[in-house]
Amino acid sequence: MHETSIAQQILNTVEREARRHQLDCIDSIRLRIGKLASVDVDALCFAIECGLRVKEGVKTALHIEQEDAEARCDVCAQCFSLDAVYDSCPNCGSFRHHIQRGTSMALVSIEGRKNPLKPAPSSIAPPLSCMDREG
Ligand SMILES: [Zn+2]
Image 1 (tube, protein in one colour):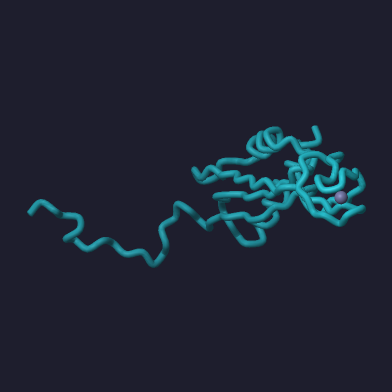
Image 2 (cartoon, rainbow, N blue to C red):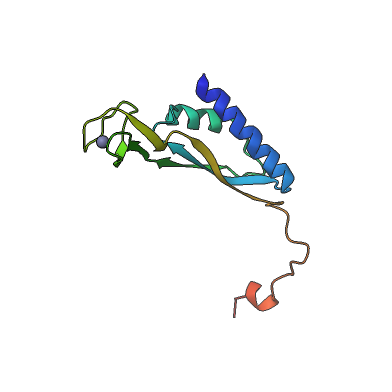
């Protein structure tokens, strides 16, 4: 259920930004999720996709970048990557560390379009030679 409320917050932000930039449809959403962000990525994707409406025939693509987690050891000051919050320092074996990154989540970008199906008002008919290729 945790993922459902995160998805709702993301969708609210996407909708607000789309309105602010007058986008009629969203082509893609890019998220960065830390390895230790305590988010079930599959459940989150599912929840977001359920909330996305197909507008003007455009289906929104969801891109997820996973961010590795890094910590700095309190004892020997070594920086190291970790798979779980309770991992020990590979240099001295200490469990005392401060996590530097990999615990957060961010909405990186939103791509969208204005009036995807309406022809541009300045569009012109193709020249006749392009349409009649019989000869
Ligand atoms: Zn250490």
